[in-house]
Length: 297
Image 1 (spheres, rainbow, N blue to C red):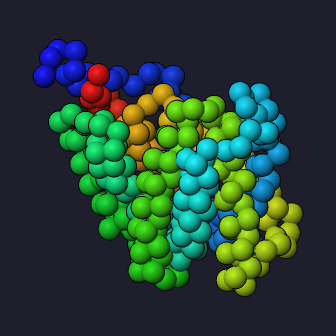
Image 2 (image 1 turned 90 degrees about the horizontal axis):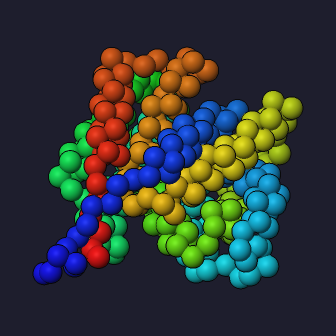
């Protein structure tokens, strides 16, 4: 192997990392709003996307191709995977604790790193793997240390949240591919447009409550839409500038935000084990995001 073909380290741009951290923190409030929507879990996802669509359309008009050019296959797949992600996750949020639902969902970096390694030849270095292992250990510790008495059906909720990790990983990979040939706004618009009707069908099929019954419920739906545009949009923008594996690990800051918000708003107690897990997770994220990922030249 010549020097020209040796894998070269790729450092993450500071601006992309900042956008990713912002997106992760914003998404951390999503499970809080889901609890407050007064609708079924899939219906909450439907309103999140439907109310975000007009804003995303306006942003997409500024991108090359706008909304008139047909979407790529990757955009369509991202929409499908995101609909499955929200359906599973929102039910998990309803059945288990906010902390558990968010932590287990964000075990997706294991899947993302493996796929990126084999499909995109993004080979993680030892420091990155050490940070990933530490972050995953912390996330799992947070889930294991949660007070199960605060959940409706903790085992089922945990299983649904764990399955969400796979859908979220597939969404990450598909959105990364979609971003290679399109702007973040255009990719977000088309993926959201695909996800919206799927979530409505799921809500109707599960005979959920579709319409919020109070102004507070509608405000929670608007909050979800804001989180989607600002949080998920920032993540999509960063995915066009970062290796998928690094992006997926930095997003692990999300469960820490969700756990703290659940503690403040819903009085979901944080056990010492959960707090220790949160510290481990954040330390692992810091280590992983500072480590290079190697790409072949």
